[in-house]
Length: 371
Image (cartoon, rainbow, N blue to C red; front, side, top):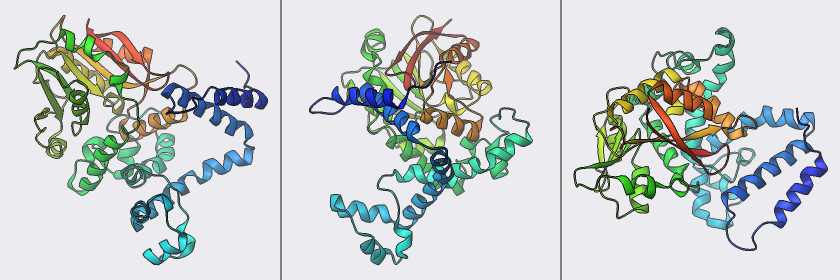
């Protein structure tokens, strides 16, 4: 096993990375991620065992404080104040809250915190007890920490469709939109024009892309903005309640209510796009989804584009590990390695032709065809 780099070696790497920074302009994603990883290594190297213990123990309290701040509307006040901000006394006067409760954090994404604290947080509290009781067997889609927490036999993704969770579903859709802001789009590193548009049927009734489980349609809107000359139809598929929120598509896409566990109604498009969906589910359910797509593909023409994280075999980031735990807790899902993705797709009659990745451990696009 390789030994960990010394503190001096890490500092030297940080210094070198700093000297390589551009004088002006934004960092390239690769440079930003590299520098982040180095700084993280440096932080861990400087931690004492007590520092590490405190960081882990107090993390849930940070989430609680941010949730309280959301309840009080503090972030709206700060947003109105602009870059000058507000003093704690001003916020105390505005809210009537004791000044001691005014300590919080200057960055957040409100829908994300609501989902993680209100909806996902209790699942994490239940997870240790559940796994111990189940003798550490991997959860299934319908028997896991989520079901134990909410006393239901439904999956987390069905449960959130219940009327009582309407606001949470809305927050979830906003979160999925917001998490893309500032992120590198898959269209920046996948050659969509050459691999899809150049080969697509241009007849008016031909379907170019079906976005399976595509939420509110932000992905298809981005696609049309990137390629305004694109011919053919774009179809958005998701569950009925999500499609209701997606609206009419404004001439960009056609909304279609569809459950991807049932046969695919759109036959033989140039591409099925499925983004950040399969990691929600265990292999068993993923195989069903993929088999329905494979059955609807036109051999020699249709492609399946899977946009997901690919876990590196070693050295997965904290973010990926956290995503993996969230997926496991909500529905027995998981992030997967390249070999895992390959075997899963092959089990449904599909073969990965090529993988495009911006950086190891980040989102990738797997292009698959019928075997």
